[in-house]
Structures are given as C-alpha cells and as structure tokens.
Amino acid sequence: MAELRETQASPPTTAAGAAVATYLHALHDRITDAIEALDTAKFRRDAWRREDGGGGETRILTEGSVFERAGIGFSHVFGGKLPASASQQRPEIAGARFEAMGLSLVFHPRNPHAPTTHANLRFLTALPPNGEPVWWFGGGFDLTPYYPYDEDAVHWHRTARAACLPFGDGLYENYKAWCDRYFFLPHRNETRGIGGLFFDDQNAGGFDRCFGLLQSVGDHFLPAYIPILARRKDMPYGEHEREFQLYRRGRYVEFNLIYDRGTLFGLQSGGRTESILMSLPPRVRWEYDWQPPPGSPEARLYADFLRPRDYLAGSA
Amino acid sequence: MAELRETQASPPTTAAGAAVATYLHALHDRITDAIEALDTAKFRRDAWRREDGGGGETRILTEGSVFERAGIGFSHVFGGKLPASASQQRPEIAGARFEAMGLSLVFHPRNPHAPTTHANLRFLTALPPNGEPVWWFGGGFDLTPYYPYDEDAVHWHRTARAACLPFGDGLYENYKAWCDRYFFLPHRNETRGIGGLFFDDQNAGGFDRCFGLLQSVGDHFLPAYIPILARRKDMPYGEHEREFQLYRRGRYVEFNLIYDRGTLFGLQSGGRTESILMSLPPRVRWEYDWQPPPGSPEARLYADFLRPRDYLAGSA
Image (cartoon, rainbow over all chains, first blue to last red; front, side, top):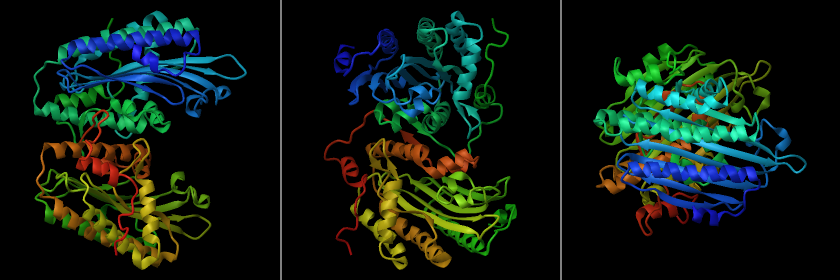
C-alpha cells in the first residue's frame, strides 16, 4: 500500500475519514490475500491518481484456476464540488467540498456452480462552507448464483444477518429488502441474484455505531463467501453448465450498465473506465428468447432464486 | 406477413402511415430474403402484439454460416399518450395520441474481418386533439468494423452519400456528422465504428420529400453492406482475430446499454425485451486495460477508424 499512499494528492480531511480509510485499506489487503491463497494467479495492482485530488488502487486477477476474473478496488477521492446526484436527499450540501472513499469488489469464478459475488463499502463526507461536516456510510454485499443451492443461500443470508445483529432489530430485514429492490432488473422481472445486504445514506446513531456496522459488514464478507466457494469451485461441470453461466452473466452486464448507479455515476463523472468496468464478467453470451427447460436446475434458479425470498424463514 | 397483419390491433391512423408501413414491410422482407440467400440458417419469425395497440414481427437468425446473430424487427404501435421523451422538441404534442413504426436491424457476422452493421428507419405521427397531425422521420445506418479496411469504409460512405444526394447539398455531411456524434462512447473516447448516416425529427420539405429520403436510405442499405460482407465473410482468421472481435463487441454492448436512446426508451417503456436486446452480440468478452500492440491492425482500427473521419476526402 506504500505505493498508493505516495500517489495520494491530498490527506484525509477528517479524523473520521482517516479511520475509515485505514480500515478499508486493511480489508483490501485481507480480501486480496484470501483470494490469492485460493488461486494460482496473482492480482495485478494498478495505483492511479485523480487529477482533482486523491486516487486509488485497482487489483485484478484474470484467468486464474478458481477465478476467471476477480477485481477489488479501493478509491479515496477529494473534490471541490459534490455532484448533484450524491446530494439529492440533502440539498443543503449541494456543491460542497467532499471526501469519498470506497472499497468495491466483484468476483467471477470459473466454475458455474460457484456464484459471482459483489461487495461495496463506502464513506462520504461533505464539508459545506457554512456548517458542520455531513457524513454517511453505504455498502453491502450480494450473491449471484448460476445454480440453485439452498444451503448456500441460507449460509449467505445467515452470515448477512449475523453482520447486522449487534446493530439493531430489523436491520438485516431492512437491508435485505433494500438489496432486493436495488439489484432488480425490471425489463427481465428478475432480481440479479439472491441479494444480501444493501444500505446507503446511513448516519443514524452516530459515527461510532455506523462505522462499527460498516466494519461488521466488511468483516463478514469472507466468512459469507469463502465457504460457498470452497464447496462449489471443484464441482464437475460440462458445456451445458458453462453455457448457462455465460448466458446468465449477460444479466449481470445488463444490470451494471443499465441500472447500477455507481457504474453510471462513475462513467458519467469521468471516473477511470477500466476500474469501473472491472465488474463486468470476462466472457458473456446472449441468446434470443431462451427459456429454461421445465423441471431443470436452471428453471429452479428462475423460480426460486431470482425473486425476493425469505431464505431464513424457519431457520434459527 | 399475413400473420402480422392479422395480429394488429388497430389500423394505420393516416394514409401517410399506411404508405410508410407498406414500404417498411416490403423492405423487411427484402432484407430478410437477401440475408437468408447468403446463409445456411433461416430466420425465426416471432409476431407479437402490444396490449395498448399494434404489434410487430421480430426475425432472428442465429448460429448461421455467415451470421452468428442477425436480427431485424418491424414494429408498428399505437398509443394514447406520446411519451415525454419523444416530444421534447415539441411541447405542443406532449401526451397526444400517436402512431409509431420502425424497422430496425443489427447483423453480427461470424468472421472478424466482416463488420457488424445496424440500420433503423422510423416514422412517427402525433395526433393532438386540437390540431393537425405532426409527423417526422428518423433513421440511418452505420458500420462497426473489427479490422480496418479503407476500401470498405470508402464504399460504405460513398453509398451513404449516394442515398442522400438527390435530397439536397450537404445532407450527407450533416447526417454523417450526426451519426459520429450519436454513436460515440464518451467513457472510451471512441466512436462505435465508422458511422454512416443518422437523422431524427426530419419533416422539412414536406412528406413526399422526407418519405423519399427514408426510402432512399432504406434502398441503399443492402448495396452498402452486401459487397463488404461478400469480400470479408470467407477470409481466413484465427483465434487472435476472433478474440479481438469478442473484445470489441464489448463496446457494442456498452454503447447499446448505456447510451442508445432507442434501447433505453424501449426497455423503460415496457417494450418487448427480447426484441429490443436482439441487437446485442451473441458472444462477448471484456479484458482489463487491454491495449492494441503498436503497429498492429488492431492499433490501426483505434487510430484511424474509431474517431470521426472524412472517409471520402479526395474521393469522387
């Protein structure tokens, strides 16, 4: 990380920002190490600077034994003028100086039985000229299986619930429902996957509570994903499963390019294109009017996994 | 076409609309026949109806000897309320009854030396309750090569110019520049391909002139594309060229899902998803931070074909 720090144009503007950046830096390394420990390939690391202030480091592993593409990027940028799209809920801070940081990852395993996953943790501070700093957290993680395994979905959502549990009743249910609403493709009438957690604009209860929640979500990502990956990464599969995986990856592309606010905001605001689009799957296909054969595992994915569902119903 | 006509919920609302529909129906058949004559595969034909009135026919050929995916659709729909996005230039017709028809095609050849092409011809009539019908034409065609062949680009643009020539000085130059502006990916700083013609909101000079122009553009599509395809479809190629084609197809997906107004409007207004997304390439790949090797044909594509350029400079 030394290289990254040297390339940063500006220091964190608040002590809170410095604390969050330290956590996210360490988590960046922790997740990177865990993935490299599983795969024969290593991450390529690209540090980059933003002319207006700040920078980041994009790490991307390609054509590995387990991951066809795994990207994890940290960015920490400073700006003179908060974009309108970031302050719709808070008109009083439109145009303020700001500090934004985020850790974002998308992992696309090779094996079609292993799910794709995405996680994001972000912290924004606006510094209005005549007022106190305004800050909030956002983040979450979600899972996109190609084949329907109930035990994976239950483990994923149990871990998501465990991440939220110390921070209040109903938090998991709230963020789970938010995730289902956010990762939804109206033109397909499908969720992107089985969801997980999604939250934005969170500052209730003060900085310590909210930062604690962010850390809990970050700390629960590897325990949520790695056991599922370990079960699935070496399962036998054939061309049929591979083709279905490539087909379903098309939905991932459709969501990210049509609906994902982070992707669109990044591209429209002159962000680093290659870092933003590292979320896209390495190989994808589209097929006209494809329908899953009745009674197939693919049909079960559609029926039971691509709609909002309470995966923990009846589970302790 | 008998099947399609039986499924239409409403008759054309104007004599002008009937004339344009007749032309577009015939062109739909003409282009379909020309493609089927070149390929071993046949088009699958799906007639569809729209609940609010009208319908269309989507024709799609997949995994052919020449085309990996070729889609051409005709739609003719009627509505009670013109969407705001269609009447931004003309507030006086917002919310009016309307009739919209269009022929749209995207052909993705298998051979990387053969370019992808897109064409669209459309006619819209708004029927405000207290006023005369308001109508306009839009359309054009554009070419997306994977390998840079100057003779193809010159033929393409000469044919585009010939289509416009009877309708006024400077028309080709105007529509060519419009095409360069429209099919542009800001986040890549690249045009989608070498362009061609693009126009919208055209009604100057009256219906006969504008309909004549639409027909001329439609009639010049096959003479523009088929000679290029014939030269390229059987050229030898290897994995290297195939991989570059799949990579470049990623840009096609990025353009269509992020920027193309027709695609986004169609998806957001509840259009038939499979008909709208038949424009997407069948197989695609993304690669992080790929750069063409200096001096390669791929580098020449970037340098000379993915930016606005006067392909007819010095040409008669």
